[in-house]
Length: 126
Image (cartoon, rainbow, N blue to C red; front, side):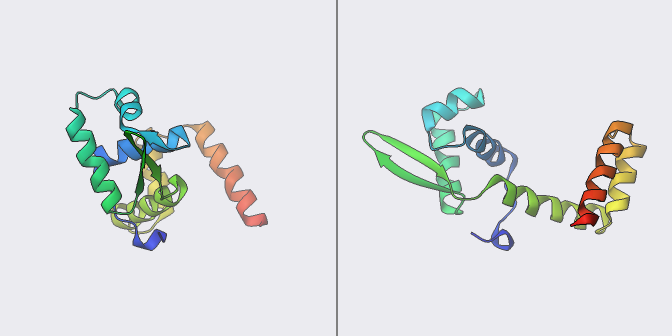
């Protein structure tokens, strides 16, 4: 699936995808129930997994008695799409406004700024 075709995930579906990405491999619903540590019933998780399959984020394969879920969307691609949308929506496409809001809100430290500076230097060299 192309990044431009991705749709923003609701929080609960994003949590599931994050758990699958963290595993780095195919997972079963039982493994996800254990990893997510939510008060969800199994049917809730299965409904969310079905929705993720329908949206093209996951593939479901039957292996014996179990369904095995595999990510079809890479974490990096989803994060890129979400970040671009956030930047455009909230900060009118301005990276400077984003960094300024983080700095003014004390969510970014001097060490973070130094890391960002190093990133910008490296990006300019490419």
